[in-house]
Length: 510
Ligand SMILES: Cc1ncc(COP(=O)(O)O)c(C=O)c1O
Image (tube, rainbow, N blue to C red; front, side, top):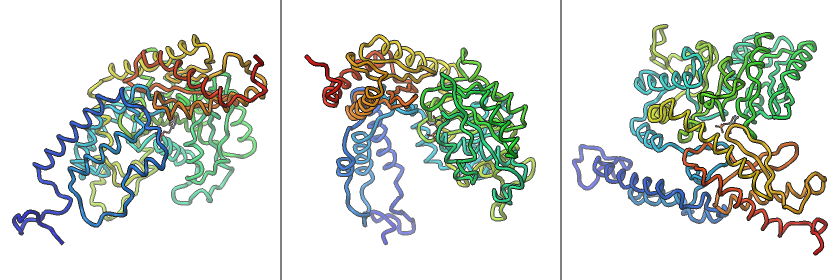
């Protein structure tokens, strides 16, 4: 059991995980140099390694748990190489997949600092400055959105968790019985009902399932031609359920749908909630922060009327993963939902006590997620963020124009920073069922090959049964040149795939 190292003072402990200040400094500088080179070289790297799972696993030493320790310098070198060479690079200027942003470098440095100090932001006394920074970050996020800065809120792991917290606060406030103590089975009346559009992200199913409502409790409201919730259908659904003795309690509005960026008519949904005494929650995980852009659409700005809002700093605030945030209009609502005060916490629980975040959300020990967000907000400021988000939106619109001008591509939706389209070989006429089936297969395979190629990374949406290619720009490294290049890449790969897959009946003679 070697505690000391290199014959140092035997009275002094030197554990296998300890590092001398000099060693830390040397290894830290080496790592930062490598990361800086990696960031500088991003545009020249493929966006994806395009390797099979077996190849990636093989690159990793597959031996069992090491019995003896190793030199941390070599380990950091190796870990950096493994990650640089075998990762999908969402910091690449041509990464447009899903809704994952390029991470701000200041956030990466912030994570290093947060990990080094390691405050436990569950309790104020365990993390005095970190707690105050998180409180300030939550307030600044509210200000950025135009939400009342007197709100409650906290940082969580991401959009799913941020929405879960909103749903739990809604249930606590509106169920009409003590769900926390008595559980869902004690429901004295009709089924609790939540309402959301059919375009809502799958967090709602998970939440309804996990928290005992059951997914059948959700009424999926149809959308209009622009994939926004049909408010008249919402009114009808609420009335029908009320007449049947059910208990509507929650309407979820989406501010930027995951597939196409559709924005529900939030002011109208807020009015319906007021009329019926329902909790209004807005899922702004994708585009809540676009409310900071001066010409933000009024429907989006309507998130300011919500009882709770979920936003995702690891999306459009470009914070490195993970960082989500829930805001709740009534700051008591989170305490009412999550607080317990066990005797083994010697924390100040008086009314004048500073905040203990463990009482405001599902987590107990909490990391210092706020630092990377706070640093980003200070580095770019409101103007910087409004500018970057506006530019991302302008780039996605520009892509739509490039697609429109490109033979072989069919533009479909364009909302916020999401543009969808598909490859349609110039000699094929879409519409016929068999052709549509083939186009879905063709575009699906095209997407797989494009992702594997490493030339650019996009994802997909399915709209009205059509498999579409989907580019989402939440990337401050993307430029107009990247937008101009994408259609050509898609058409080239599309033509190759078409040549391989085209069914014989669609091949024109001659
Ligand atoms: C509208 C919306 N809500 C929720 C989520 C889930 O967010 P996360 O992946 O951060 O949990 C997403 C993710 O893309 C989203 O687009």
